[in-house]
Length: 125
Length: 149
Image (cartoon, rainbow over all chains, first blue to last red; front, side, top):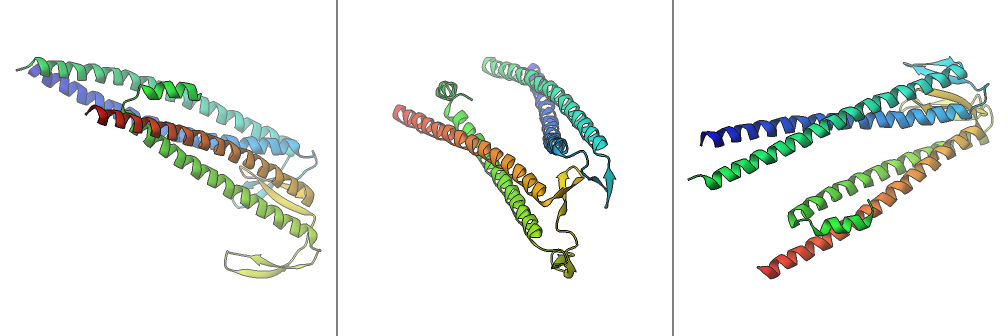
């Protein structure tokens, strides 16, 4: 009986870990969604700046003022930022994969414990 | 997801799993509908702005205009420049464009949005079809269960 109690406790711990992982995954997914939105927006800006004449006037909003920007500089700035965001997304993807594989491990562990618990109950008095 | 694979998988699901699947599909359909609506709203905003720009292009310098200070307070003013506008292209960048360029810019944005709306619509239709298959399968399973009981 003490054995079953231990199994139950272990199972409970597994469930808790699993829930934490789930919350973590949700947070990561949300972060990725935001980054992806920023990525698409930046992507269109890159495209738009590419289409412009070299003499076109470009301004950047810095707080409440618009500051005139050199177009070449603006292009490279935005492209760089696009790269940064891409790297961030890749990093998040790796993290998401890690959490997902951890969740899968916990799932297997939970199933094992559950089966053990059921087997024990059937064999018990 | 290819529909063929879906068919095979659905057969082997228990009614409980089917109900869960139906719930997920409904949630996804809801999300897709919301995204589609948001895209349509954005597209309408661009279309409206394009109209305003064209109207500005059609007016003369010195034309009087009511300038919105807030959404409910307007002051009279005059148009000083009817050839150039400053367009917000995103992430804090503003580009000076002539009227024709600005109109083209909005057309481009509208086109991309319409393409995305099309994709969302397509996905929505796919999901609705899957939902119907799941629904039918669920009914079949329920009927079979009742027949057995």
